[in-house]
Image (cartoon, rainbow, N blue to C red; front, side):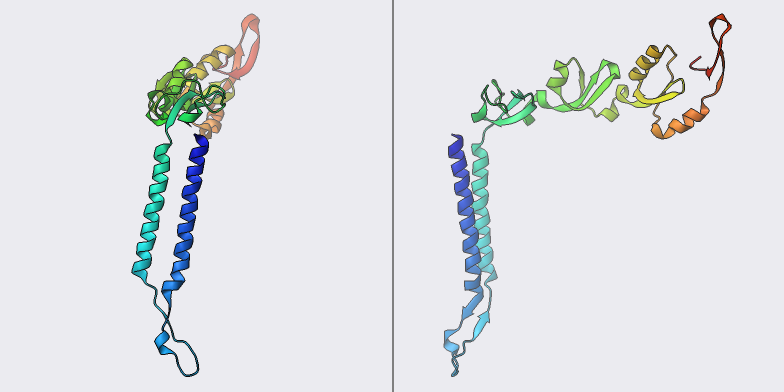
Length: 230
């Protein structure tokens, strides 16, 4: 079946090429006319350069209409199915119905009978994990839910849990989500200092504003550090 479709496509391309060559060969014959009634005594020939623009335009329109019909017909013959996951691990891939084989790396065993663009599980959005611990943009709905994520049709920029800010941990500053900052602060044993909406361009200003002083520790020991870290 696949070989037949290839032969059909090759045949259409050959016909199109022949049509182009015919148009090219017809242009000189209509644009360059010889007036046989104007021979002079010295044997010279009078020539008139009069391209028939209307005729050439009709030929071109006819060629384009035939070419378009051929390609539309080829597209209609190609039936697409959707693999939610191909044998090589690709997600939401359109395949020709003839290639739905469990042995083909680019195919799958049970493809859906429609294209992926018409499949609800392949609609892309934002996948949110652990309330903002991780956010994945352009994630297919089915893949997100299979990985225990929360799928949102909105973009990353529209989801509050995915918004990043400055996470201040002692004298260190990182660009994180609030949930990421919380985990980092807990692992460092200090209170969370998350400043939403700030970018890396503001890190230098934050760093300069961090005041340092003596921190009284257990057993009378002291350490010179920031108030937040103390």
